[in-house]
Image (tube, rainbow over all chains, first blue to last red; front, side, top):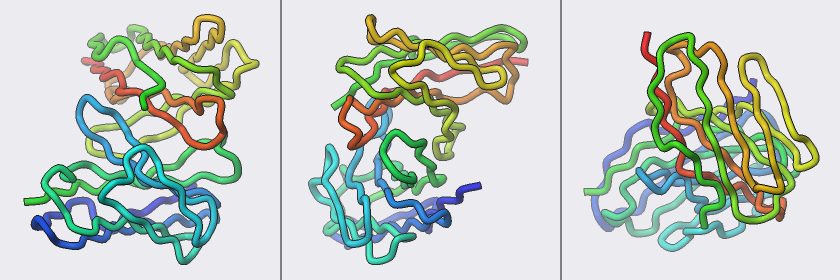
Length: 113
Length: 111
C-alpha cells in the first residue's frame, strides 16, 4: 500500500513564525500536492509538483511556498504565519498523469495563534 | 474554483439501507473520482470513472456518470456503521493538470 506520511498531526504556532509542514511518500510517485481543507470550502489546492525541483501554483498559493529537493519529500512553507492560515493541511501523491488516484496523508491540523 | 458540487450536504440513514450521493460539475471532464474521508483523517480513493464509461462497480459501491447532464452518483448498498464518513467527488476539469474537489456529503449510518 502507498503510504503518505505527514510529519505532524497537530501543530500550534504563533503569528509571524515561519512554519514548515513536511510530507513523505514511499511509492516513487512523480506528483505531489498540498491542499488545505476548511469547513464549507472543501479541499483547495495550494501547490503541486510533478518532478523534483518543479512546482506549480494551485488555486490559493498566496502566503505559501514549497520545496521539493527529493522525489519522496514535498514541503509546504508558511513564510510568515497568519491566523487565516489556521486550517487542516493535506498532502497527497499520485503516479503518472493526473487521471490516477491520489493517495493522501492523515493531515496536519495547524493552529496559528 | 469549485468544479464538483455534492448533494445532499448531509445524509442520515439506518444500517442496511442504501445511500445515494450526487455530484454535479460544470465543465467537460476526462474522468471523475470519488473519495471517502473519515473524521480527522485523510481522503481515501474509492473509484475512478472515465468520461467514456457510464457505470462502474466496486464491492458495495456503484458509480454512474452522465456526461450530458454533467452529473455522477455514488450508491452505497447495504450500508454499515463503518461507512459513516464524508464523501467527495473530484474532477479533472478536462485539463489533466489537477483535481478539483467538491465540498462533500456527510453520511451518518446509525446501527
